[in-house]
Image (cartoon, rainbow, N blue to C red; front, side, top):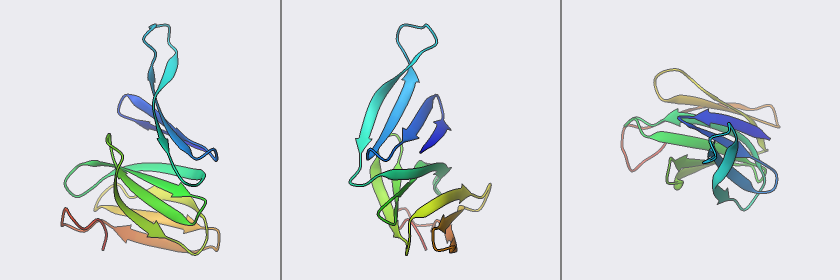
Length: 123
């Protein structure tokens, strides 16, 4: 459903309820292989990457249960969850100020901002 280049990795998501992390295969023949699979409870529709206010990489993961999960990379520790009225189909990140945006199937566009506190993910 979605792919994301992050650092030296490729992340993909699918309706099969997985997020896969891909890297160059050890054969060195230009192939890639799955090095980690994150299992979700629902199908995954979209991925987007950003940094929190402390500069830590965060993966935004829209699922077909009307939620967006926020994971710290590379550990996949959950940093928060956003609930929506309908499936979030679009994720976008602003270039500055810790802003990101979600667009759902009901036509709602929401603006989100990371808080400055490390324990609290969103305002």
